Image 1 (tube, rainbow, N blue to C red):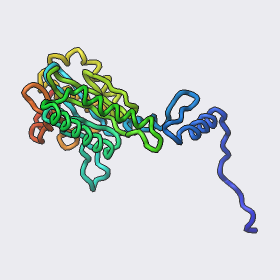
Image 2: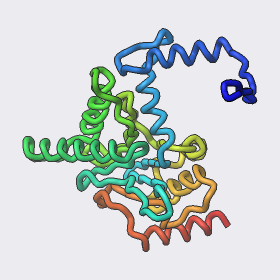
Image 3: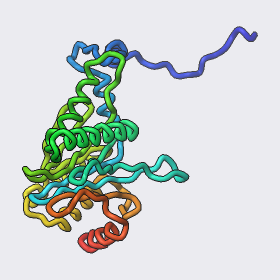
Image 4: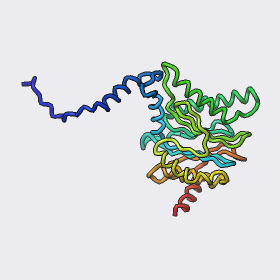
Length: 261
């Protein structure tokens, strides 16, 4: 009889705690403006999770220099890797993790803020002020219906009259000032490495700081890193923001291998 059938799927036990949490999440994550009873904004947490799943980015700051290092990640073997380092101005650049399209839009906004400040005041803007503009825009997205939080985390590196700076922004709108930072997938391993060497940062030379950043980046991946799998940018005294060429990066990889051996 075609009307009869036997269900062979195993029965699932009903867990009241799991079901209750899922019910609350489904009820309170439809809008970025809706608070859950636990005092959480689920859509903001989802955006922060997108940053955690992105490519790893590491930043290190000494007295005279700031170094950014990122892992390259390609969508497939047939495509090129997406760019995670962006030059904003002669004294400023960023590394991103998360949704690259959101990061590209944020860098355009940051460039526009630099141009506006130069045109209005005839001088370069303070790095902290520019970082605050980006974090304020991220926070605004968490308070407007019909919009979604930006799924991007940024490490902002630059130098101004007050010295070298390294800032971190996140989708919630929080802004952090760091001596060293790591964001993206498996970034906790990089953070642990940086914490062990934090006492060395202040007086490191550019070569030593770059090597340290690459060592921290290496902690976040099980695969060997090379000049084809990562990107590095530097900024500081006598050095405008620039992304290292393959020849320069290869020299640092050789130095890194010698230090390991």
